[in-house]
Amino acid sequence: MSLTPGEFDLQLYRKDSDGNDVTVKDMSTELTENNKTLLVLSGDLSDPILNEYEFEVKQLEQHFRLFATSVVADEGSFD
Image 1 (cartoon, rainbow, N blue to C red):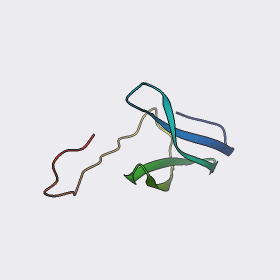
Image 2 (image 1 turned 90 degrees about the horizontal axis):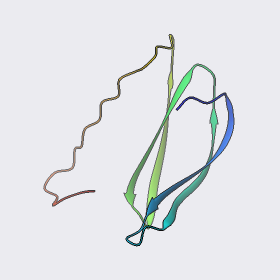
Image 3 (image 1 turned 180 degrees about the vertical axis):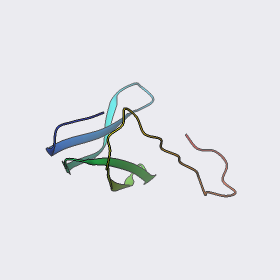
């Protein structure tokens, strides 16, 4: 998603087992020109951790590549 620079209020939510929206986190963030912002939500749903990363874009392309990996060992399963 691309937005014009400025401050934005965001609400992150999930669906419960009945299909109802449940708010996980409310936040405000400042989007700046020539930067990409990545939000990573982790931790327990009762006490989520939200990390915000900003990357400078020197030349805007039509797309960029994002790689992610999990370093969690010996755990049963995750959603």
